[in-house]
Image 1 (cartoon, rainbow, N blue to C red):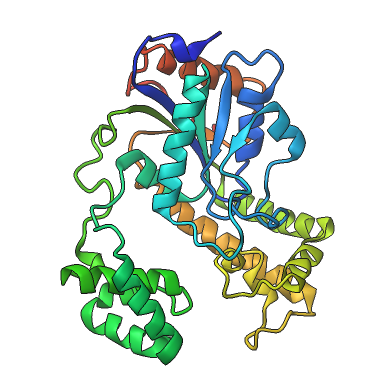
Image 2 (cartoon, rainbow, N blue to C red):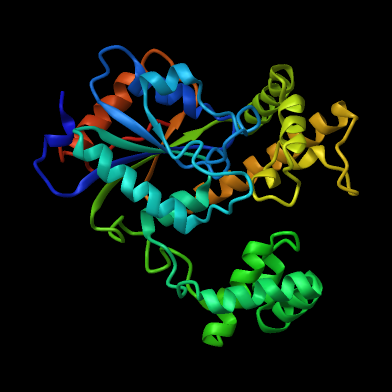
Length: 341
């Protein structure tokens, strides 16, 4: 069924499927869209801030090559670990991917756990000014010549809110905040975040129609899944993967290596950790804390239809029926939601 042409409308229907780390997003994607004879022909746009990096496979839980062959994924393995990939980059690439997918008669499914990416894709990017290359280069030279401390001191003085939010090691965001202030005289934190104009409907980006589907799990069950997945990553060779990246010259200062599952391998002095049991414990702990933050962030997204994380025999047909009605233009906001029983 060529649902992409069903409404003969220039507006692109986009499904967003999201949930915290280890909630079961890949299994739901496979159950809904990758089976033989799936009624919806779809391709996935990854909304994971770390799956964009080449060579970081185990620690980012990238979908298997087999699944990608059956259900094509976009925005995976598109950056070197030393490159910064911003939310603006994501929205631009995701827009291009969605237009391309829909032009080929398929439905774009934006799926991942990076809530900031999802929110900015749905509601639009903040109105902060574009980058100024002259100011950015000046800041970079100051960073090299004087170190990070004078820049941190300046940011604390002119934009204490951003200074509180930005980690001292996150030099990209530090320079961006100072760049905005030097360019406009306004702190970056004074610009409204995406979507603050209202969440009553998804009208911020009129080129799209959105269906947001979120995955819910019991908190303790989710934490146990995180612990098991961390253990599985070590069994799959996570330590060897990170060590190989270090041997290739990547360091903990590189944007990709700041990811949970990678940063924990570095000691305070920058050396590679040898106590792998302690590293595993730390990764699991940081992943649980991240999941908690994700759950809180997802609650701020508008018009989410929640489904249980375990795809039982009845779930895929019920959700697919809801998706088909959405694509056919018969979607109603008051449609039933699929909470776990």
